[in-house]
View 1 (tube, rainbow over the protein chains, first blue to last red):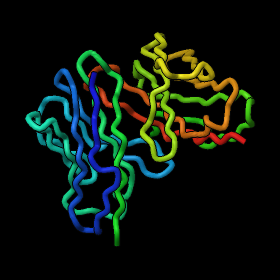
View 2 (view 1 turned 90 degrees about the vertical axis):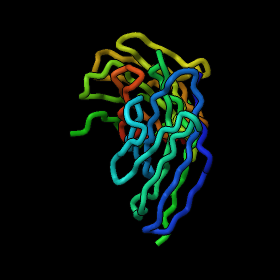
View 3 (view 1 turned 180 degrees about the vertical axis):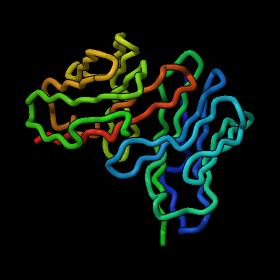
Length: 113
Length: 113
């Protein structure tokens, strides 16, 4: 079975400073990993995904994530936070022979002016 | 050019009165999922269809049922809503492979009065 752990339930940053959201995964097989963002009262939007190609994955809105097998991590970063980045972020995993997604608990990002 | 459409966006129903939420997709994806998301929590999978095959999660209450009359449409029926069923309900689709991301609708916010 696969699972993800988001290490921070809440991250607060100042506008223009870097954002780091941490995610560790557990999977018996080589996983596919995703980061989704959810703004209040909206559905989830895919930011980026890792599917065993390049370990550094670039996504939308300036986000990127690095897959590190040795650390079983898939942390999400952005060099400079914008006010519009304030939202809930979910790290998600799927694994071999299983197209169902397992969600982390989520990280709430607050951006201070 | 919305790809996964949920109707209505907001639904108010009376305690115990059956309610149906709808989801349609223009992506021709094999899999359609229904998730329940309560405040400040990750989405929780209720069930999904792979084509016409229905897959219920073990802990989904019998009060929740689903229909998929064709590839494009999927419905969530709540037979007797209780106050604890108030939540955001998210529909999602995917191609049904390990590397496929899920595409989410905007969600339906259900209030039970």
